[in-house]
Length: 468
Image (cartoon, rainbow, N blue to C red; front, side):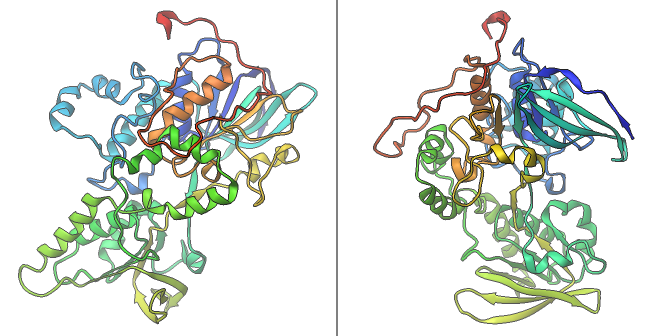
């Protein structure tokens, strides 16, 4: 393995991870003359949940919630610009689709990624440290080859860092030993399309998880298994196959106004709210629930009922193999306090995602980090980790701040606003003016917004043409 010489010219910003959120930041940073930014990701190219790009599945936010529009509608990286580049504006206009398909959102993001010179795929970030002598962050990385093998080591110096490492599949402990083990397939929904043909051929399939992904996978399997011989179970811990809260006033929980309100609450209150607000983002889209019921009803037209079992309020206590080719699930019903066993040929875990731990990458910054009572990083209102005042640079986070900013942290609709907030703070200017009010709801009785003094040196921008 080769080692490349450190780059002594410091970057203004180094991004770690290239998912939709850091891709949004890169797109909005691109036209800012004088801002030197680079973004690293170990993957070979951009892909957005490839295992869940099920035919017909739609993004649950409107197309205006793209990477840039809600901060800069004139950006060349908007979804409408993507349509124009593909000669698809008029077909989209007549399609009248406010919510686009997931596959189309993925294609749009890949188009943006292919257009940005600041992205570096095949680069795995190994560590971030603070160099007090130079007043800079040191970002160590491994450059990967086409097959993911290590080719060279490198180091970049940065005045500021932004973490956008995303989430990872959440697998329940009882089923963790069975995932990816030989024999009957037990897999997370993130890998659904890779195993779809095997699942369709399996004698009996169990889907665990009563959120949107579980609903989409159950519907896809149901549509493609023979009537009367569906042999599907759909189970989950939630008390019901509950619809997602999608009223207009309910959606105002995904506004900057609510995010600022939530950030100002006491830590115990925030923790209680995050747990209680699951239906804002973990329920089932009403159209998907209707499609499932319609498909089940259609299969009763010839008499009889489809061979399906849909049971909420159930959790898996333990699980194990049966003769290496089947899986036995030990179930418990939360309300009845009853237990039973279910033997199945395949299990799909639509059990969601959790924030990827930052400890490995940020171990070198641990002595400088400020944490809350549960040892989570503290994050200020401008999405910066709270660090020791001796650290003059900033470490921003994207989608790692649900505990401090609420349910909007993973929401695509706030991507452009958060990116613009970060860039405004980073530059000490306002390249992206942001609205002062975004909701009709007034959250709380006091409207004051706490101002946290900045310890970092703002990046000076040179003037841009056309007043951008």
